[in-house]
Image (cartoon, rainbow, N blue to C red):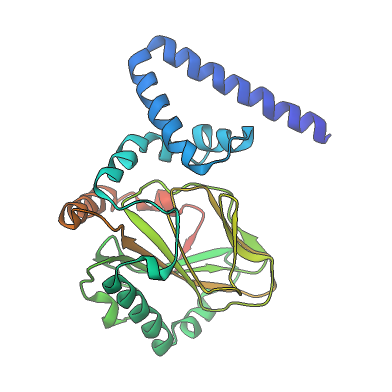
Length: 267
């Protein structure tokens, strides 16, 4: 049975490749443009298996591929992309803003306020700020409503027991993702995987990365996992330009931002 399933996957993959070749034949210039940019962007993941290629070009990475010209051009105005960062790699002012968020979350005891809201939900999300715009919700934290220099999105992601995401790619490269686990437990089955790097939350509650890289979050434990979910301005040469891009994206995506979190329940 497994052999048949694997064979079917390869057949579907070959058919998709044939479709790309057909499109390239019909509209060669546009197809060549996107194939070149897509291959350049995909190569950052440093994994070239059939499964990974299939995910990026034909699966949940399709939007990332579509935006690959924009994302790669962002490199022209940003600092060197490390892929995975430590807190000390960020500008001092950015570090201070992130530490302020952690202290505020702990001071306000937000996790306790969220516990009754999770219920049977597989994965929950609450936003206090999204791409610079403040969000109204049942928890009013005035400290989060101020304008930050680096922080653009503030939220909490919640994984119920025995839950995980599929392997996926974030669509936009204008920000970096900062996660902070409020409930780290001594369990090697609670982690985030970025490419081949596996980060165990009990080793370090902080994890900062370029979320357009292939990644997967896992909570194979009997406890609920709560993570501070923050997007920060990517360190860049022209911060005013990057802020303008972020505001423009917020305006364009505000009505359809649900497509980025379609597998989450909003709290």
